[in-house]
Length: 164
Image (cartoon, rainbow, N blue to C red; front, side, top):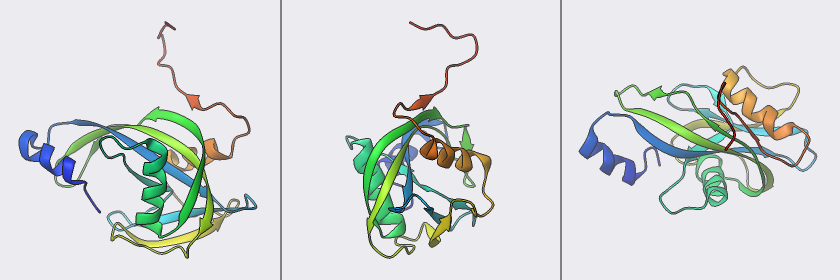
């Protein structure tokens, strides 16, 4: 599914004005932690981890698993939250504006043959961690967060912000 119905309904009311949305990134690793699953987007032909929008009322980890099945035709287990961050504002080709609170999860592949499943992507494939295809820094960073040791999720605090 390219654009969720709830967003199409909102766009009918607000046009292209900015939307604040919640999203997920599923960094899917194989059992040996040697390969990562990437999808090649149909709109930009860029390789990225699996990403998507959280539906209203949907749990974020459920959204990550759903997106992996919808976009790459694989079943995964979501293991842990590794990062919480805000994306840069996005302006789509049709003029729609959005910005995302993105939750990045490290996930484990369980089954399925990677393939573009829903039309959002033209390819889905495994890549050795040392041989990733060229990709935007923002996506490479999400993969690095998933590979970082530790149990706590990373997050950013704006410069000059005070802790409450």
